Image (cartoon, rainbow over all chains, first blue to last red; front, top):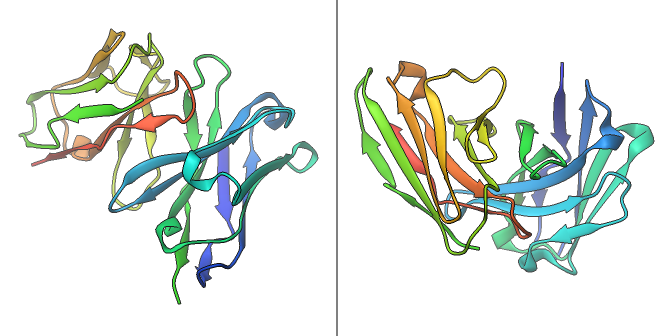
Length: 119
Length: 105
């Protein structure tokens, strides 16, 4: 079965750090772009970052640049999101999503992991 | 690129035909996807490249449009279709989503 499973969410204080993980199975992980997308009740769905198949290129939404880092380990079929200097507005459900190289659409999504930034 | 969906919500009955529209703030070609989301679950891809039906998605779902104006049509609502629908552009980063359309009974 083709799937991705996120983990690593939790409660963290403002200014703190958290590392999210996403493990893929059922497909050739190293052949796909990988994305992180988050969802808040107030702002809906927001794409956060993505990383090319070989990790050679990474892109971020402006609001997380300099604070979040996306990375991947193709040997472990995993993609990560290191989140530093967290703010209350980063509170969201974070989804991992596989990206196709054809028109870059996101076709496989996980169930998400919840990040809460609060003192 | 801003994506604007309409309506934000709608009420419909089983068997109805429903059309949701999505407008991009600039030309995005066919770099447009549609997703369905039910409470507590991640988004599910329905349509990609504006009009291609994702494998396993019922044929009552269809997409059309190109450039800046797109639509999602559900031809004959089933009970399991009551959900929130989102459009999303992948023309360039940052990818952006519409605000969602909630389809209610």
